Amino acid sequence: MRKQNFFLQHIENNVFKYILSAILFLVGAFVGVAALNRIDIEQCKELVEYFSSSDKNVEFVYMFKKSTVSNLKWLGAYFIMSLSMYTSWLGMLLIGVKGFCAGFTSAFLITNYASKGIVYVLLAIIPQAIITIPVYAFLSATCVNFATAYKKGGRRGEI
Image (cartoon, rainbow, N blue to C red; front, side, top):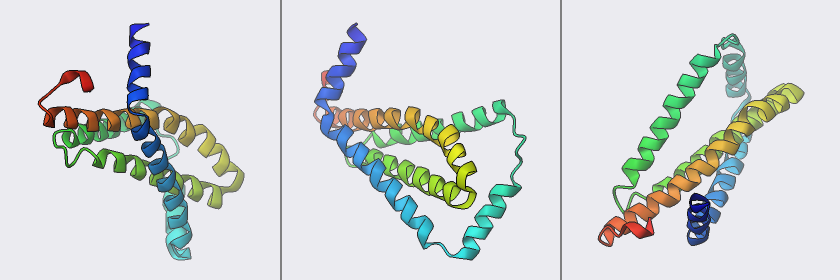
């Protein structure tokens, strides 16, 4: 019960940062879709060939390890950004980058693979985004709070 109150209080205190994170993710997703529309046919064919030539028999454990390492790199980036007041806001931009990647990939799959692309987006991209985007939004808000508290003298109660 106490942890639930902590998270609810944290969300209430940082509602602006969470709204900003959501807006940046959506803007990134829209820019990703627009970026797909800006690439020429040759580049699109190269992406389709690359995607089609990849090994489809990749083991779950390999992909899980690769995904975990990738997400740990993002967490490290958030930690490094939280060390300075001036770089802490870059954490919000990382959510925009995640939105760009999700938007571009989803639009690419749906455009080039039609119903198979929709199924792939629904089964592979959306579940991952449902987990990682709120975590990154929490990290970005905490990153800004940590840098602000550190700048003000390290008052731990504000983090």
